[in-house]
Structure formats: C-alpha cells, structure tokens
Amino acid sequence: MMTETRTLSVVVSVYNEEQALPLFYETAKPILDGLDWDYELLFVNDGSTDGSMACLRRLAAQDKKVKVVAFSRNFGHEAAMIAGIDHASGDGIVCMDADLQHPPECLPEILKKLEEGCGVISMVRTKNKSAGLLKNITSAGFYAVINALSDVKFEPNASDFFAVSRQAAQVLRTNYREKVRFLRGYVQNIGFEKATIQYEARDRVAGESKYSIRKLFSFSMNTILCFSNLPLKLGIYAGVFAGLLGVIVMIYTLFTRKGAPSGYATIVILICFMFAILFLIVGIIGEYIAILFSELKDRPVYVVEETENIEKDIER
Image (cartoon, rainbow, N blue to C red; front, side, top):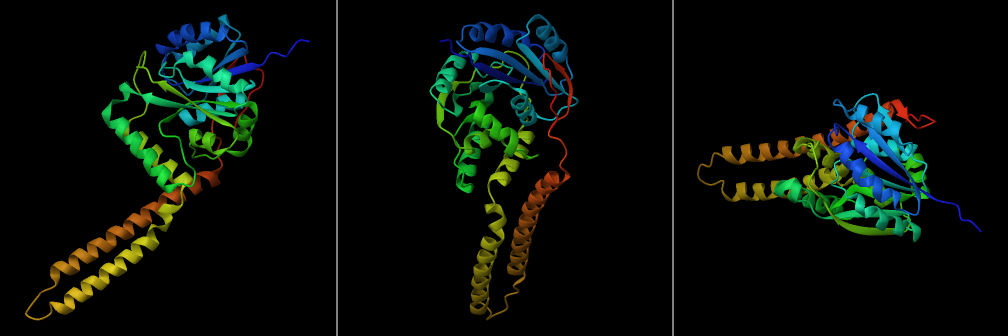
C-alpha cells in the first residue's frame, strides 16, 4: 500500500536580498531534494527596491518548485511571513529569512519533529555574533519584560525561524489577523504540541540587517501593547504612589513649617513629578488607541502585485 507523499512549504521573506538569494537557493536546494517529503520553496518579495524580484523570476522560471509572491509595496517582515503562510499549500510550513542566518541544515530536524506530530516548532538562537552586544542585550531585556508583563510566556531568543503544521497554520490564517502583530508570539500562543530546536545564527552572507534600533524599539513596544494590558493599569499604581508621596510631603511640610521655609523647591519637584506621571500614562493610552485605530481601519495586511508558479492570488 502506497502512502501519500507529504509536502513541506519553506516560506522565505525577501527584502533587498539580491546578493543573498542565489546563495540561499544553492544552499537550500540540495537539502530539500534530500528530504523524504516533497517541497515548495515560497519566496515573498516584500517590496524590494533592488534586483531581488528579477532574481526570483529567474529562479521560478528554471525551477517549478520555486514560487513567488510579490507585494505592491513594502508591508514589513511580519506581513511577508503571514502572506507566505496564506499561500503555502504544504502539510508543514517553515518560515525563515533569505540571508542564511537561519541555517537550512536545520530542515531535516524540523521535518522529524513534524513527523512526530508536533504542531509548533520554535527555533531558539544560542548565539548571534553578528547582532552585536547591544542587540543581544536588548533582545534579552525584551523577553524579560514581555514575560513579566504578559500572561503568555515566550521562549527567550525565539526567532522568526519557526515551523507549524497544516492545522496550526490554518489557525493563523483565520484567527490571528491583527494589523499590528507579533507572529512568533502568536505561534507560541496558539497551543498544539510544541518542540524547541536550538541553532546558532550565522553571519549574513550579504547585505545588512533591515532592523534599525528605532524599528526594533517600535516593534518591541507594539508587541508589549498587543500582549499585555498591564501598562494601562499604571495609572492606578502611579496614583497610589503619588498619593503616598503627597502624604509624606505634607508631613514633612508640617514638621518644617517653623522658621521661614519657602517650600518653593518642594512644590516644583512635586508638580514636575505629577506631570511626568500624567504624560507617561497619556502616552501609553495613546499607543493603545493607535493600535485600536489601525484595527478599525481594517486595511489589508498586504497587497499582492504579482505571483510566479502560484495559481490563486490571495489578498488579506
């Protein structure tokens, strides 16, 4: 009795990776050919402004297993990953980057976990020398903060290199469609049997990181706000703290009123402190309102301009 061959979809996010794409294909192709599963190599071009799309067209023309989804403009890395999941047809889906920092050599081990029935496989970095000391420290701090604030506990150093089963991917397609999103967090939040595989991030084979410190900070703030409502409660805590501080200042003023204390410094410090708390809380509320506004506008997560070797277009 013949068993039906299962298919692995490898989703690769591309943004200005003209130099890296041929190297990625040459590295990943022999590994994929050696797997027991059939496969499709699905590249998502996130509005690249270099020659990435021309390179992808050439790869798709010479290899029908190469499929391409091209956005009408740059929608961001998160949108590229969810677009790949939307268009993938495999029984298992792996998301990774084109710069070879996510080693294709891990694919056989990922496949083994999928065969064992795992619905979610998180790839956890053990080392990332190319990121530098500052990014490594801020990454560790980010996971410490989000795990302290959120009810959902995230795997420290989990990356955008992950795999999901067909069933888990369907949940992401239908239920996790926020405009402001943290896909690797959703993957760890949807349930199913989980597995963790450790890997060492390599140096980029070409180009440079597309995430600046400013973008990483904005991304981190959006993630915290999406997974925790604790910042909204800062008003309560700040009010209690300010009330206690006011009592202390009142007692201090009563005991030092003899003589001729001006009280000027005390009043100025107290007013500055109170306004600092007020503006902090207003700023946090503003960030939450911005996220709600993005959801209410309900604009598409991405818009597809062109596809290669894909029969059906999907726009979400």
